[in-house]
Length: 136
Length: 136
Length: 136
Length: 136
Image 1 (cartoon, one colour):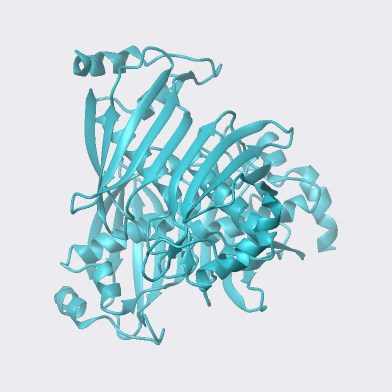
Image 2 (cartoon, rainbow over the protein chains, first blue to last red):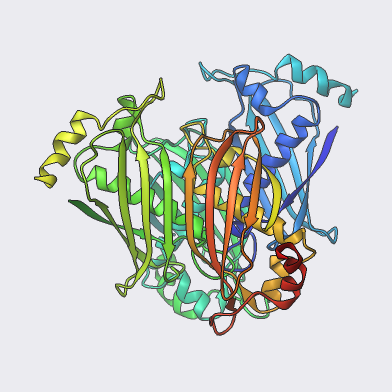
């Protein structure tokens, strides 16, 4: 398993009049967490796009257990439980507040696609080489 | 069953550099669709909050089949398949483009909560009276 | 002068914990108003991009007089006071609530640029022909 | 003068189909920069709201010189050139990319208001005591 942890500070813009983070904004927190997860391997999602592979989101699932509030310093855990065998990759996320309470659980399914043809692709070899050791 | 249909025009701000609507923004389209769904009954979510009942989102599930693009005039269908029996209510959404293609499928679970105590509540009687006829 | 008026309903996502529309979101309301302004002439900004001209924003100025609230049906007035003589165009916006109160004043400066070379361009002839009659 | 510097990483969600950061999103970058500016003094905007003082935005002015791109690590400089003498405070912002190029210039005017009465207020003494030394 490959697991990383990233911190995100809640912006005022991300709150709504219920005094909590608007539920749709967690998609951005998960995005930040995935980007930092890949960066920790010495690769970036930006590099991947530059190399001709894009990763559109195919599914998003969120369970909101407790609200996040303005200025909270959230910890977003990211897990890749299985090495992707084909074009499909599944990330698991958990968002915690500073007291260690679990606030939100997320699952995001993405595809590797050829940026030009939009045909299914696989994880670029450069990233695969870096991530494979975590699954031995 | 109670079903309504609302139109949303894609904003430039809602696109990302993949030239499609950013996946997290569908949460807003679903929100607009639910608000208009309730408004069509002669009630508003704003009225509900004013009466002391809030509806936080508990779960969000999205499947992205095809992308939406800038300036698309989307049709968002909203279905309430069952009359809520307690504090839990489940909305189903489908997003179509102008060619009638199904782009996105959503399911959103909300709770009725007392705005002050945050205790579980039920659908306000004023709304229940308006929506019940659709389930006979 | 060319002047149009568009309506925008405030989304829950656009509010913040001060119970008002987050100030940064007016940029989107102005964008919607400009897009509808151009559409009213039988042309669209989407068409313009497809024809190879993009309009990046060069300046944004907002004055916030009164707050907008959730579910407000805002009227956004858009004025083009002068026909653009070169690559620069200036839009003026005013946002009103349902009571006719002026909430926000905006000015947005955009350039016409060649989408590929990023060189300065001018208003596409197709749009110019439609808008010129308003300045005679 | 009181000056601080904060870093913000551009999110995919913040880009638009012009492959740059959507102009309206700089309001959030400025917000983050102001919050971190205050935090550097050992106080937070969150504390201020908790103490009964809110700071709504009254004016926003942005000049966009060069675009920011996905995954750019931006440096946002924040300057308070004058100690606020009354309810009005003016922040100046500059956004730089990793090459040290100036991308965006911002000016944001805020008021100190009583959170309950919405009457004009002044900078809380706790913050004033911390910031005054920078203006001697």
